[in-house]
Each structure stands twice: as structure tokens, then as C-alpha cells.
Length: 158
Image 1 (cartoon, rainbow, N blue to C red):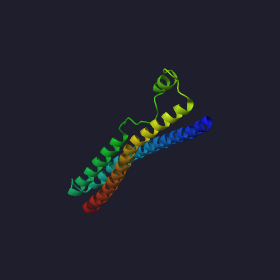
Image 2: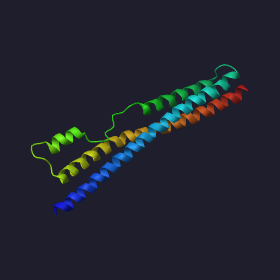
Image 3: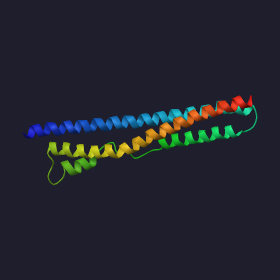
Image 4: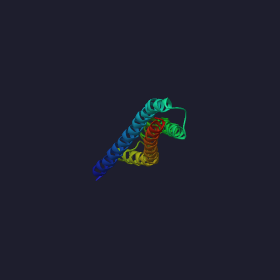
């Protein structure tokens, strides 16, 4: 019976490891896209903004485009800012608590406790990952708005 329990806890542990690995990949993807969005925003502003200013000074639409640029750039930087994600159990704590403790843990107990710990980490990270997704959507919308505003500014200055 104990061998069955070992296998079941191992399945739970493997699933928790997989979930955290997928979550880390998702977070890395958001950050990569934020870097690309920041670059796109800078190129858009330098290229379209320069064309807009060829026709004259700053108009209300140009100011709105610049505000959209600052918003998109600021949000992109917020996504890129380091954040303390919980993506692994500390190996030192595992060794001290489960291996070198008063009573070394059985493998099923180790898998069980690590599975629960990783699930808690996954849940704590989930809120942050959802916030990154929302921020990326907002920054993308601001970039789209910026492009539209620059085009309108260029068209009205021509």
C-alpha cells in the first residue's frame, strides 16, 4: 500500500513541477513581449513623431500621442521590472527540514509537502501573472492608440 502512495505523491509532485515550469515560461513570454513592445513604441514615436513635427509644432493630437507613448513605455518597463516570483522550493530548506532534520522524511512525505508548497507558489504567482497579462494588453492598446494619433497628426499637418 505504501508503494502506491509513493507513486501517487510522485504524480502530484511531477504535476506541480510541470505547472510551475509552464508558469515560468508564461511569465518569461510576457516579459519578452513587453521588451518588444517597448522597442516598437520607441521606433513608432521616433519615426511617426518626426514626420508629424515636419508639418509644424506640437498639436493637441501630437500631445495625446506622446502621452500614449509615455504610458505604453512606462507599463512595458513595469512588466520588465524584476519581481520576486516563487518558482522553486529552496534546496537548503528541503535538505535541512526533510533530510537532515530530527527524523528524516520518507519520500512520499517529501513529495507530498513539496507538491503542496509548489501549489501555493503557483497560486501566489497566478495573481502576478494575470496582472502582467492585463498590463501587456493595456500597453498594446496604448501603442495602437499612439500609432492612430500619429497618423491623424501627420494627416492633419499635411
